[in-house]
Picture 1: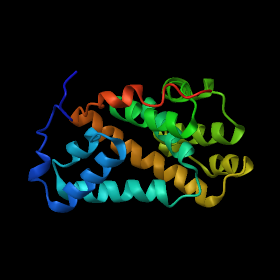
Picture 2 (picture 1 turned 180 degrees about the horizontal axis):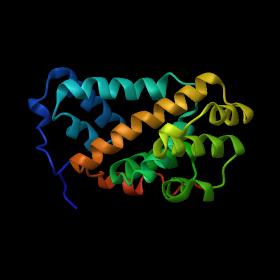
Picture 3 (picture 1 turned 90 degrees about the vertical axis):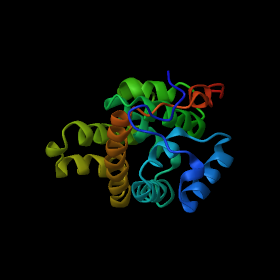
Picture 4 (picture 1 turned 120 degrees about the vertical axis):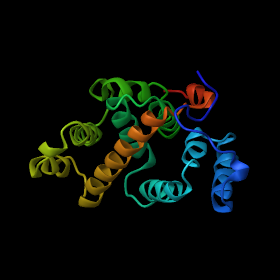
Length: 192
């Protein structure tokens, strides 16, 4: 695999990016210990970088869903969409937040085979339906989520995370974004 952040478009040098993007990339690099390739790739178009990551941050910071649930949705949707970058990168985050090293692999291939609560299974079933058949999502689908205890705000956020990562998956696939090697092994040794 290529060491480049993506192969279908040029990857800009971080030093050539606007100051606010360089600062954000530096923050992520410090937090992760490496620069996730999605930041370098989205540097290709700074005017898209800013709102993309602002919306991402809102989705993970302003939600009653816990971070494990957010990452579960991301990995499940990314698996449905065959998005290598997001399955690998968010699989690492899913393992970290869930402290379950097998969970991300199960979600990426078939969430129905994972050991999940009724609430989480319904949440992921909804995310898959919204991904595969958005025109067939009905009020009955929302009723199922309410029956397993999701609030209206949580349902909104499940839909928002699903929609955002459908966009992200398509961008990552089109650009051929490459997962950093660090993501493949991250949080795999956590006790089940």
